[in-house]
Image 1 (tube, rainbow, N blue to C red):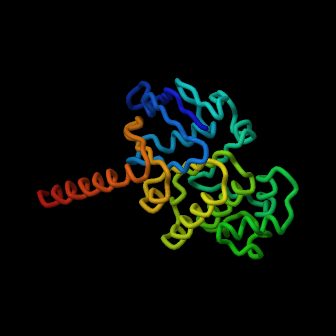
Image 2: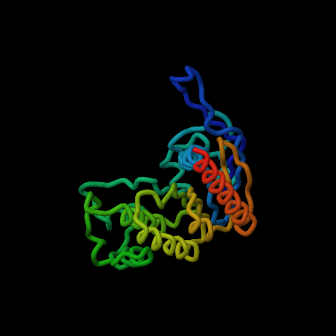
Image 3: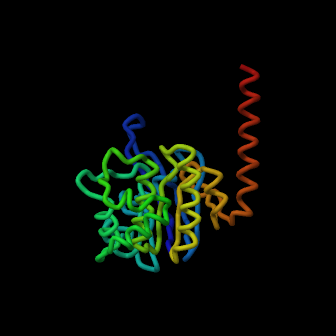
Length: 247
């Protein structure tokens, strides 16, 4: 279980010549085996939370607990050893490394080619075409994201965090990515946390949390939250159309 307790985060703003508040007293719990999606408007603090969970940035105030252990000041490596996996919004390319190398590194053990091929197949990649492929500019964003998911599956993370996995991929790749997440949900025994505003991803969540202006506005089940989000989206669309008519 992951717990964010009274998390605050501030950064220095040169324009304001002072601190700017990014997260404001955030409290959030991701339960064991839960599939949670954090959503909300751009600039609301979604990606900041993801980076903080992984240890890329540190909170100004508050604590982060993972399975009861305080991990607030632990490094990315230390958190990974505890079972937290992270997929970047823009996947990293590793020139000179091959897909099989990454899967072995992620698994943290000797991995056979057959095992690696199983993970690649589970994310919808033809294993024989990718297992010996270099992780370089020849791979598309969608391919890299699938490889990242395969790495998390190989690692068997207790908590897998994805920061806007739909960013930078085409519609066809996104459709298949949703299917990959559905398979990951069935295969994994851990929790999944996705930062996203895509309806297709929200529809497969167990729990949805809404963040806006650095604050958690509401948390609830998919069945509770989706109708509210759809209603809010329709209201915003209507207001926008009214504004355009008056211009």
